[in-house]
Each structure stands twice: as structure tokens, then as C-alpha cells.
Amino acid sequence: MKRDYLLELMRAKSTVFTTSEIALLWGESNVQMVRKKLYRYVKTGKLVSLRKGVYTKDKKYDKYELATKVLTPAYVSLETVLARAGVIFQFYGQIFVVSYLTREVVIDGQLYSFRKIKAAILTNRAGIEAKDNYFIATPERALLDVLYLNKDYHFDNLGNIDWHKVNAILPIYGGNKRMERLVKNFLKATQEGLN
Image (cartoon, rainbow, N blue to C red; front, side):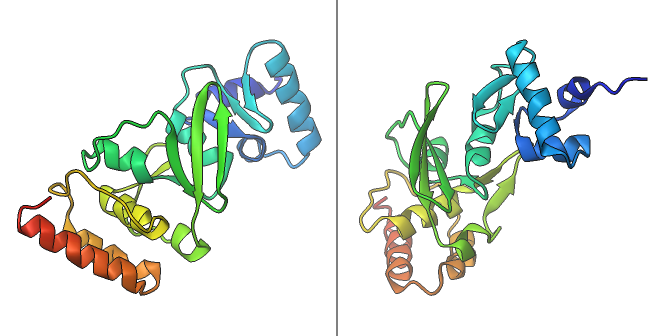
């Protein structure tokens, strides 16, 4: 019986795949063979190529999953998470991602903003949740990422932040005194009802 590579791909949970993920899924070490099959599937409309080396089953893919597959390792964070949690009220159309490079990429009309962070912080899972096919920061981790990457930042509503979680995650930023001082000040302001 002939192996149905496309069916194997369609049955997978992921909505977005890289070439290397597909090779692993198929158990195929011949990357040229994988690329040829993918090229044929895209040409016949059975797969969609979002960019070089990144494919999706159809246009109904998860944009957060795509965001974490463009550059890896990566996780969704910063303003994307803070806006969803109601910590900031500003709407941003782009998806913010923390990774090993700073870059802006437009894929399928969506802007993805990648911000570089130290490898030791990037690979630490404290405050990172695993969703179906991607990683996303908790609001507490996103807040700390923003503080780490920005010298001055305004938050609209810190009432939903769990400060015990913030203090538990804070050490992964390497004893950053500026961040420790800011966290202390934000906590005090929240307790006094100023934010």
C-alpha cells in the first residue's frame, strides 16, 4: 500500500509546519525528498506556503502558532499578551513575539514583531504556558518582558497582575536592579490604588 504523506500531515494537530517538522513527522531524513513533495503539494493547492520553509494546511491557521514558528525558540508575549489581559488598553494590530532576533515580518498580511531577549531568559519556561501548538507568556511574564526591553513604559491597569507570580519570575532576568525597583514601585502603586 502506498504511503499517503499528505494525509499524515492533515491528521496532525498543528496548523502550521516547518520543513524540518514535516520531515520529523514523516520520519524522513532525505530533506530533498520532503521539499519536492511539499513543492508539489503547494503547486497543486493541497498545501499553502506562507513563506520559505513554512507551510499550512489551509488559510484557517493559528496566527500565534505561526508567530512561534518563524523564528525559534520564540513565544508570544509583550503587548499582545498585555492587551488581552487588560493591562494595557492600546490596540496593536501586530503580534508581538520574544525570540533570539529583533525583526519585523509580514506574512499573509499580518505583521509579526520579534524582539530579541537574552538566551537564558528566552529558554527559561517560568511564566510561559504551552498552548496547543505554541508557547505564550502569562500576563506576569509579559509585563516583566516589557520592563526588561523598555526603559520607560506606561501600564493602564495593573489590578489583574498577580504580584506573587511576578516576584517568582523576576530572578530569571539576572538580578536586574532597575526591574526590581520598577516592580516594587508598581506593586506599591497598585496597593495604593494608583494603578
